[in-house]
Image 1: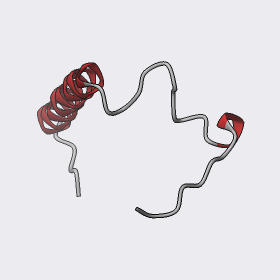
Image 2: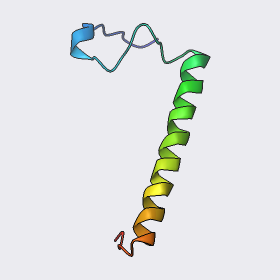
Image 3: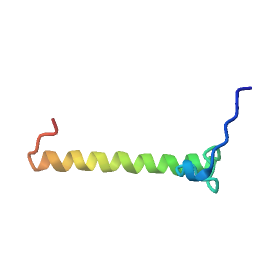
Image 4: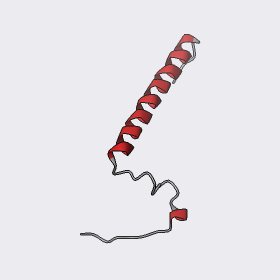
Length: 56
């Protein structure tokens, strides 16, 4: 087993101890988030094409 390093929560606020990333509920919520991000991205692309804007 490798070395374990402990840091104060204030130094790494993106880690939420009340919603651990190894739980199935986190994976479900993360999958929903990424699905929404894909939809938003597709909508942005569609709107820019509709308005005649170039994405490149």
